[in-house]
Amino acid sequence: MKGSNTNISEQIEYLEALTEVLPRENYMKLYDIICEAEDANDAKERVMEFFEFSEAQAQYVLDMKIETFSLDEAKRLKNEYRELDKIRKVLAKYADFEDSEEECEPEWKLIGLS
Image (tube, rainbow, N blue to C red; front, top):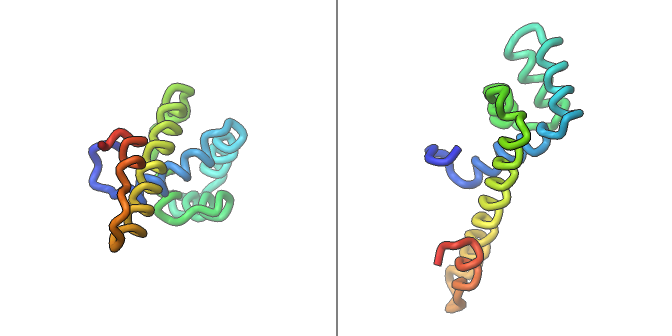
C-alpha cells in the first residue's frame, strides 16, 4: 500500500477490511464465500453482506494475493494500520486546532513527524 495514490482515509478503510478478514475463521469464511459464488460480482456482493464492507473494501479484499494471509504479512498490515490510525488521529486533532493558537507538536513527535 505504501507509495500508492490513495489517501490515509482510504488506506485505513482497506486495512480495516483486512483486519476483519485476517483471523483464520474469517479468511476461511471468505474462501467459502468465493467458492460458493456464481461469479466475481456475486462474490463481492456476498463479501459486502457477510463482513458489512463497503464496495471498495470488498473489492480490495477480493483483489488481495493469497500471500496476504501469511502470519508475517498479517503482522505487517496490522502495524501499518496502527501507524496510519495514529496519523489520522493527529490530523483530525490538527484540523480541530487549525483555527486556534495551540501547538500539535507533541502529537507529531509521537508518530515520528517532528
